[in-house]
Amino acid sequence: MTIKYHDIKPWGRSFEEYVRMFNLTPVDLKRKILGCGDGPASFNAELTERGGNITSVDPVYNFSAGQIRQRIDETYGDIIGQTRKNQDKFVWQEIGSVKELGRIRMLAMAKFLEDFPEGVMQKRYVPGKLPSLPFGDKEFDLALCSHLLFLYTDNLSLEFHLKSLEELCRVSNEVRIFPLLDVNANRSPYVDYVIDFLRARKRDVTEVKVAYEFQKGGNTMLKIC
Image (tube, rainbow, N blue to C red; front, side):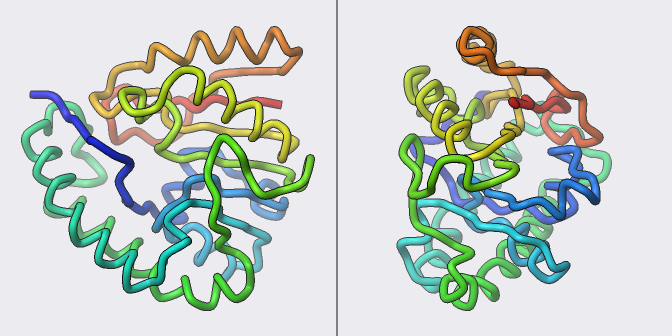
């Protein structure tokens, strides 16, 4: 079986997962952070509670909390159903079952939905999308992009990836991307093109092993300075 998504799915992860996916240190968490494509992740809400400086950008923030909740409900069954049919592509250790995965994700997304109205007023949730972001040059210290670039290799072109990474490098001093796999746990064929493209532009690009693996083999991020 293979996993196939016809569009980008709203699917949120937690603060603890972000810390591990991106090797975030206590020093990192004090930096001015951009979460690009965060969707309904709870990272913004939880980091804000800890006193962090975080802005999330995503096209889904054009909608109300109620509309986003409806979208989550509409897509939940598809994601869980495809995951259940493709369990061999995942590591079922810390998350022990598909049912547990659903519970954990819904908890994170509920945290986001609770925080979203206040976060919009505080301008912590900003509508926008790659490859053109509504921010100034080097406005952020660190940009994080979780489960968008590379993951949706079948949906997003190589040209989109290259333009998006140029844009992330424009708005932030450092960029981290996770994972480097597509939805079927295969290394995205775009990764090596992206590395060559960025290095040709004098960027320091490294693959960094992280203490997080849910997709089999998905335990590295791309770090760009």
